Length: 202
Length: 202
Figure 1 (cartoon, rainbow over the protein chains, first blue to last red):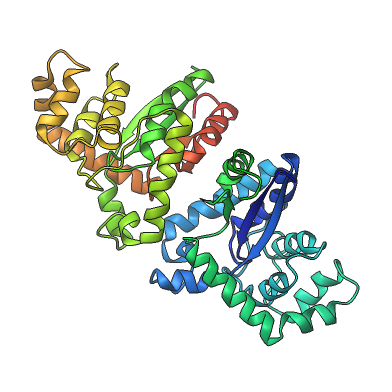
Figure 2: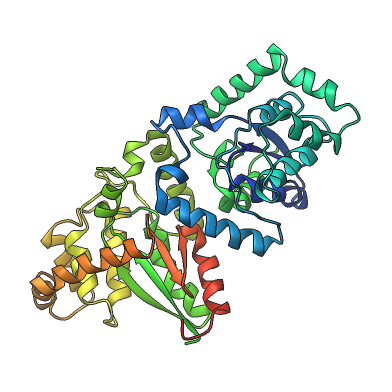
């Protein structure tokens, strides 16, 4: 692989759904690998004084986002259904992703969680849903959930969130390519382009 | 022209600079006309509880934006210098643009104001600067400024801002194409594409 793109995502984040679905294929087409970097947006939003999603706090922004998601998903051929609850708690799914982020099935799991949340309107916060989604990706969901909820995995997700903060991440999805931060689903191509221009070791 | 795209902009808005510079050429290449729609973002930000630019209120977002502007402008071949003051008061320039938005020189004037603010670090709030920029576009800047500051023009800009609010606009730049709202410099191509798909009379 010529380079690497870090994909920083939060399972509650609507625009992370189209980004998560596209990132591996789009990067791969340029010979660029993806590092899956789950983190929690809640603590970072709280730093900014927000106790809820800005799409709920600012209704005009929220109305725009839901219509934009419909358009974006239609253009990308992605199924979309506005979730009955937003934002949904993605903590357990994020622990699974964080503690298994280098496993070969990580991309499939991440995409399955987003599809469950934003196309199937399922409650991704529950152990039942996460376990059912894992069953489509791994042989032993129970073992994966056990590891995902051990103290080391919980600390690893908290560290990832601190790392996101230090990188200057303030929203999701974000991409880090060649030492540069790009924010938003719209900037995936720009991040990949930057990664192609950057030296291979960054 | 096959269609029309409304370009809603605020002279204080950083991302409106690359959008304003590109919009006419990009739309024209698809046979689409541009309606220049200046408005004031201040009252709309105040609706959201903000007394300053979100790029000042949220420092991580602000740091990102300035770096992103450097990258975007470099990629587009646009001169860029971070202004010593941000956001600058674009009220007078907006009154000029609003009261003359259908004049053949409007695009040149809008681009000149953005270049002054974001490439030349000039104080666009003053009558001297606006007058000097007008001098590059019209034969009689004094007459233009007189009309721009009459009560009817002031009311017209207030009405435009109300109209922006009713359209669901919450930031700049925004585009309206075929009855749909698109927010952000990144979405110019999507708006043009929508305009091409929409019936010509919308």
